[in-house]
Length: 320
Image (cartoon, rainbow, N blue to C red):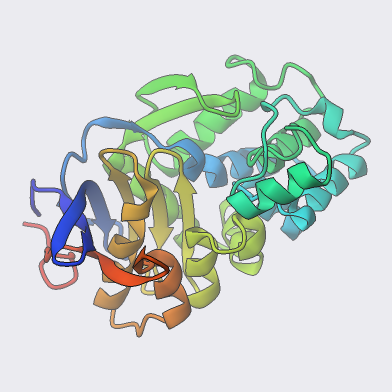
């Protein structure tokens, strides 16, 4: 174990231009703490990395969802056309329209998708908001109840309970960017969420969420997104990004992790994930490297790298 955070550097030419401190917890396949870095016991909002637990709560309510719709319930989609069509279809199957959504209106994530959306004459909509899949699933679970976001609503109490069961106690509550309740746990407990999903039995709702995410990684995020690339390029893995530089992941060897970039910059997550995947003995595909640690560009050509400083990754050194 180490008290020092992992540091991710953006190098341009011969100089470190920026550096990001990353707090991290890695759990062994048996659930024990393998290694830690940085502040792992302070409460952190898991943000959208908690969506798999919220999807478990939706399924536990008996909601009729296809596997693709389960992936959407756990998604922060990019708002590409097929994403929006899938969310609209989920709503329509339950007799609902996009007007029922209570997430905030927004543009699709990503510059290209947002530009295409505006060019088609659209203004920000609730359907295009990256959390609309989660909200559609919650609406389906509550039979269209417009108050489904209320913190004391049975749906939100069920989400809180699912997180506590899969990860650990909720230490603070606020409001997420989409309008749903935001729950905080310690980073150590947050790492238990992907561990629980990975090790869940096939007949459990948690197991079904994990299976759906692996089967439909593009629905979970989208083109060029880190969590989609991890699950697509590394069979058996799970990954879910949250706002402000949060990620939870389970690796093919059964280890699991949660990481939080102290300054909230999501670009620091990719190099850390690459280090951990490589530490398990995997040959990391180039397609994943291109998404996780893209070249630093100047004048249209590579002039630098995004990398971690050397650190103990937990596979070479066990926790003391």
